[in-house]
Length: 199
Image 1 (cartoon, one colour):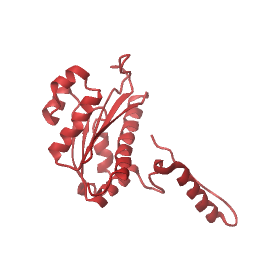
Image 2 (cartoon, helix red, strand yellow):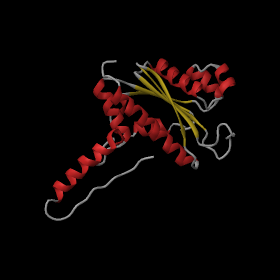
Image 3 (cartoon, helix red, strand yellow):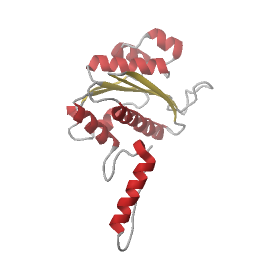
Image 4 (cartoon, helix red, strand yellow):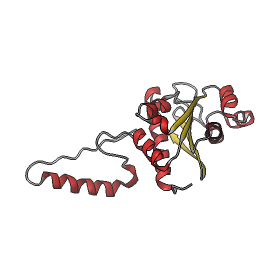
């Protein structure tokens, strides 16, 4: 879920060559570049939120708490990260996040509608600025022709409304979860870069 790019040069003017190459890479890749050196995506996201005086909650199904784990690995995360729910069962989605049972029955747990309600429920209950939700099919079983293993929905609720994206990560469970977590964090990062700070 992440690509590392290393730039190196030798000889006279090596530092200037690397600096120029980095400028060119950043120009080509734009918002795809989230940091340099030892920076992690989760640390970058938390720092963006901290700088804006904003907060975050998460609602996880298919990622099983991995999103909260990555966020809380960052020192000082408690100034931004308020709460997280691992609502693996449909009952927990209803009980903890206020997901409509009718939406679950009509669309299924892995759907745009349920992802949206998970994020909005987490944001409402935590009273956070943003809430990020994940729901998907990690496999190896549980897929259907309409929703194959690897299907995932990510939802981000915030001041400007709720955004839901559909991704397909056909990989074994651990890789699926890692990819989904990274995609969720990057969805939040890109949204923060797009939305005005005062919202």
